[in-house]
Length: 259
Image (cartoon, rainbow, N blue to C red; front, top):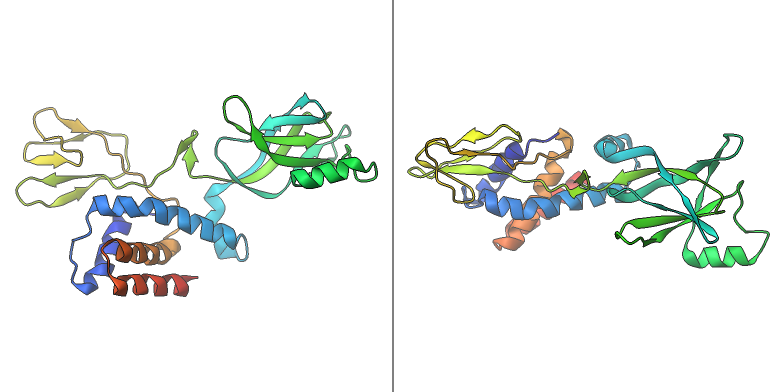
């Protein structure tokens, strides 16, 4: 895990070399970190398990042997993908009547139609197939399996940045000293903070007697070795936002180096 407050401070130290000081506030940082976080995830997925470093970095996001109950609907058996589904790993699996594992071919709808036209290539309990797509009445994305006699399918997948179906968004919360304007960064915790007089919370709430705030900080689920890649991406996007061509070039160079 990477503490987002530490990442922010290291990022500020990095761009301080161009004499910007603390010109990049936590609010500016929060606008970028969501995009950068998703970009890094997609970069790792593009190089999925090409080396052990990639495997380690993605370990937190892997879900194995998730079982999906299926219901026969016409010629297919239909089930709902998990709410945090992002990308499949390998091939799904079923257990046949003898509890033998059978891998399921993931095919396109076009290929499904072509294969079903020929009895030699039609799906069977020994060689099942599935397609991904379509939604139910609650907008859940579905998986459709042939033949329709299959009751359960198991899949390994990469989960999206979600917890309990809620999108996971890295965030850095803080409050400010009214006199010195010094910012205090808050840790990720469910324990409320006592906000005393003379301080103002990020959303404008003034401190006082019995005033408490609950931190909305969300840390990042990456390894310490991924920090240089995150900082490189932050530098590039910060250069676009400020704007500053030198900062963009520096960020791109960092990305290339870490890639």
